[in-house]
Length: 309
Image (tube, rainbow, N blue to C red):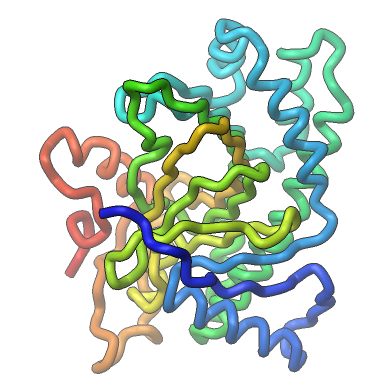
């Protein structure tokens, strides 16, 4: 099924807002966020202060290092992936626990002999800005769901990862699918892109729509499977994919990931006659492992197949 012209995703401008929990402004934005994630599982946010353009120039530098250098460094500090059979156009470098002290500085010294302070400053400034936004949105969701008493426990149960993506242009005989349809498996994902579109979203009525960023300061917030589970299905975790044109594409993803051993359990407050329990408690890491192995066994890697009631 091809994609259709895009229905405009909800756009929320966080750049001009100074919000305090409980204020009228906070409540208004909270309700917009919740409604968007119910309907689409995604919304576009305008965020000021993230050094996006400068960071992308450095990311291009990183991807241009020799392949052997990138693979060698991935063994020590990052996860570097490319040339997968189902994703020949896709290249990724991921930094787990990105906010732990020294992670990005150590990586820079593996690529640049004397390190690269500008790269480190850009990554950390960007990551801290996006983490702040991500945490605000998740707090709004917990508040809207009446889950405030679980907020501190939730904050302590997650870590953060930052990924750089590069999609090369397909050759004449190659697929144009840069990234196959999937839902993200963790809590939340924030996506940025560098000028070139290609992201498509599957709506609740099974239509693929093109996603176009409206501003250079735009980011997309996506609800992931674990957040869908925590809300007892109230929030939508959208399938999405990347379809390539004739330009290479760069993107950044910031993910919140449950820590090892974290059990996702639906709060009893979210179960009632109108909202029966949808998912049994599950280990978030085991769910990711299930999704990785499911396709080879002919099983659709979904929450329902893993822990549905």
